[in-house]
Image 1: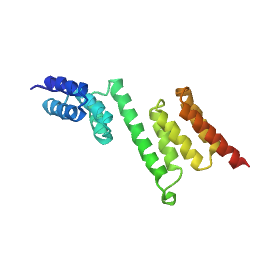
Image 2 (image 1 turned 90 degrees about the vertical axis):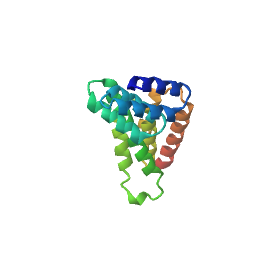
Image 3 (image 1 turned 135 degrees about the horizontal axis):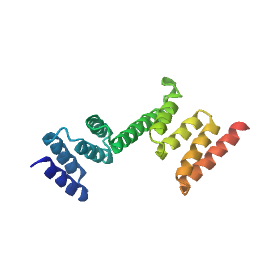
Image 4 (image 1 turned 30 degrees about the vertical axis):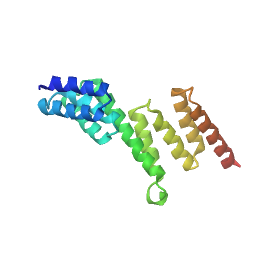
Length: 173
C-alpha cells in the first residue's frame, strides 16, 4: 500500500468511529511518506480528538517543520499548545497542596493559552477560577465576561458569573 491508500483507509476507520485504527493507519502512511506534512497534520488531528495530546503535538510540530507556510498547521499547533497550558494550569489549581507552587503560575499559563488561542473558552473559565481562588474577583469577572462574549447563550457561564459576583460581594463586606 502507498501512503494514500493508508490515508483512505484511515478515513474509513474514522467514519466507523474506530480512531485507534485510524491512528495506526496514519502512522503507516507517515512511515511510507515521512516528509508529507499533510499526513502528519491529519494524524495530529486524530490524536488530538482521541485525547492523546503529546502525540498530537509531536505530529503537528513535524508538519509545521516540514511546511510552515500552511496557516492551518500553525493554528492547530497553537490550539494544542493552549490546550496543554490549560491542562497544566488545571492540574495546578486542582492540587490540594497550594503552598508547593506559585499561585500566579496557573494565571500565567492561562494567559499564555488565551494569547495562543483567543477563542478557547475553557482557558477563560479556568482563568476566572484561578483569579477567584486568589480573591481577585474583579479579574475573575472580567475573564468570565470575555468567555461569555464568545458563548452568550451558555447558562452554565451565567451561573458561574452569579457565583463570582456573590463571592465579590462577600469579599467586599
